[in-house]
Amino acid sequence: MAEFLIIVVALFFAGMGVYGLALPAHLVAPFGLTADSATARAEVRAVYGGFGVAVAGLLFFAAFDASGIRSVAAVTVAVALLGMAFGRIVAALTDRPTRFYPVWFYFVVELVLAGLLLSAAALGS
Image 1 (cartoon, one colour):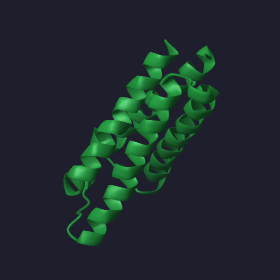
Image 2 (image 1 turned 180 degrees about the horizontal axis):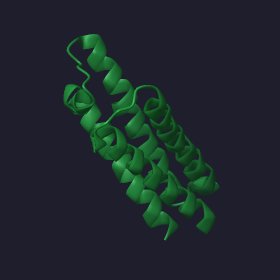
Image 3 (image 1 turned 120 degrees about the vertical axis):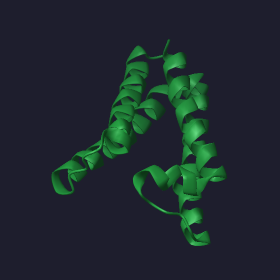
Image 4 (image 1 turned 30 degrees about the horizontal axis):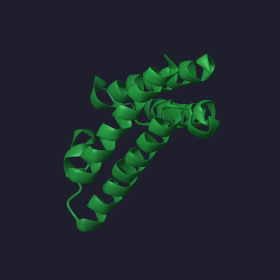
């Protein structure tokens, strides 16, 4: 079961990563951001694309507990997701985003994915 939970999260990161690499301007458009220069697109490709692909690779590796890293990798990525969710809470206190999508939609996604990874870590090897 732990393998399945980790793979679900890995697939999310793989999708985000490939999408960020292929269509950086489209990825950030729902947030009201524009990637209308080569520098902006490079940043989106790095932060969403490359990072997403790297995390997906780590999680796929961890899903099969290669080298005994499953729990550590799952908790590490869960903490990163919880940090992202925390940033959205800070945004709610300072900027007060009003629409559910995309801010609160991704807040829920981040909490759910973190929960899956923490559950996988608790299940152990």
